[in-house]
Length: 312
Image (cartoon, rainbow, N blue to C red; front, side, top):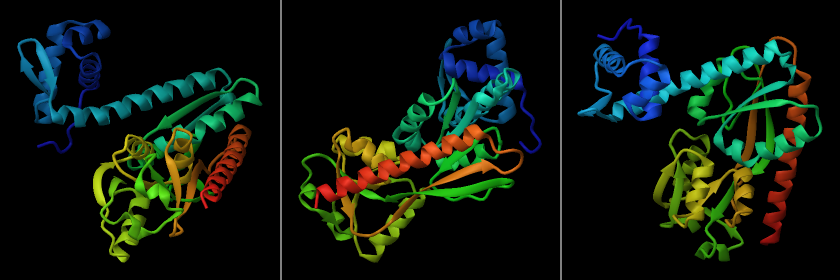
């Protein structure tokens, strides 16, 4: 019975060290303890949680599937502790010049590098922390309130938080170079009938919107791969796995890497949803970052519009 179970922090630290260092010997060295101690603590942890974390072959350990799932949660707690430590150091060192951003991977790759370059080039030294995670997990992390700005696709309700949105145009079709559909100027839903398609997971809000569009049109794309991020989708498209429909930011970013863009006949507006803590004073640094974000998003929207006109 796991109800009320409280895990020992030392056991979690040892488990994380073994997963990170790939062996008990290396974990023992990293934690400055003995291998027998590592082994004993792992067995105590397994007994407490009620499932095996490792397959044991002599002194070799191979993580079980359960261990991989467990470690994904453990990692998040360690990342949180590291971020808290950085915040404490920033406050101690007059941390007004430290800005903490949480976002989905698509923004970390497609737009935030441009924003960071513009933002940092016009200011005195500023330390930016960018925490990138899939939205279903990021929503929970934003409730920790250690971030100054959160950027998500979906609009979520947060206690004591101010939210707004940034318009970035419409979703766009992305195709491998040389694909048959690149001969079309504007793609209709029926153009995707029985076409190899790279899709998002069911939790994605834009996946649900596309599902409705395809279902209403009686269209059945041939789903080849499902992945959780727009960057993952575009990487699959670039490799020739299939076609897809993604947000305009990632589409423009990958157009610079050889992917072909086409407009979608159904208008599906795309917005960045922005989160900020509503209590306390609003940071002038965060305000400037958001202004730079809006300017960059406006520029990328114009670039997407230009690409769309160029193919007419």
